[in-house]
Image (cartoon, rainbow, N blue to C red; front, side, top):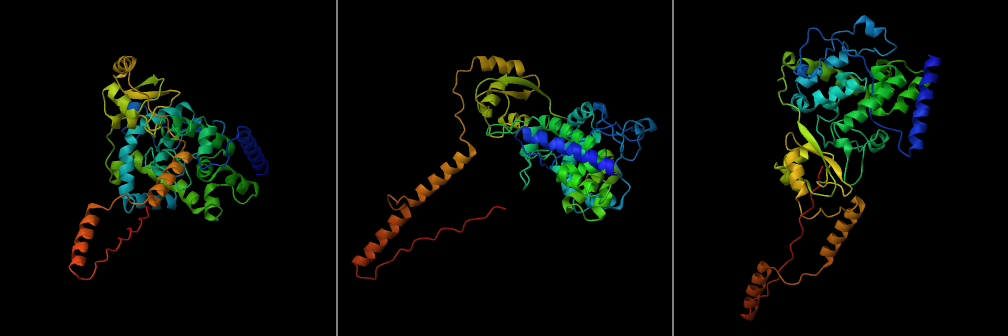
Length: 393
């Protein structure tokens, strides 16, 4: 145990130093695992045409288990996993059904990326509990995208995050980043459950528990109360979600039927709105936004960017782009400057005196003046109180 914790701590220290050297935050809520492909004989999934088969109930073959510490198994036979299976079938059924249906758009491509990175293809279902496969999901901690990456982790693994682009929202690029992070975590801990826990709570929290020799496994850490409640639930929740996703109809769910996005990539070397890109490619703005979630401000950066257009429209777009003489998109203000600008504009509007009474105000004033001339009591027109501001939760 002592040798193991020293090795883990040494790896984590090097990991942290590397992050500091790159002037990025080392503490994260994300994950990474390397993997051995799990054999799946009896189970059939809607993703087999893409070469993706999952069998959480089928143990890895002996040859994989003997392979250099890479064959840790996901443990599905645990009461807490069963509890989450029940929750997904009852009070969380609406969430799970929607997320499972959306998964068909992303799982085939995600699983292929994970496999190439040497990470278990089963982890393509991790975004199901992280974000419900919503590319624009944002957590209270500032984690963004299907894999819920925080800025420090995203940048550490090569994602672009600025006022024009947030590649954490891109289901392809963020999967490359998450896969590498999961792989690094598994090399650090040598155990899938601990790696997933580190993905959720940060690797140094797990390192500290191991270094103090408080517990050796995820289940021990969870049962002894060493983990935050969210992290304690994270692993069994994922295992339950994966168990259902493998054979949804057996658990009373509809098998997903949506097909993955098909697209071509073109390089746009000037700043254009996505509405202009849509017009030049002969499709809708909504389609271009769905294909390019990283461009969440609706604008191609001034420095240019590789943009996705629907499959088969690349040549038409390039011809239309070569003949386009319209204006470029106006530059975006930095978010901080934009907030200041909006605030100053609101204050100025609030302080500015009214130039003329409203139509209703003129009518009331005229009516009141007439009554005053006839000797009746003057009418006092009270100002309407502003409506109470609504708080958005």
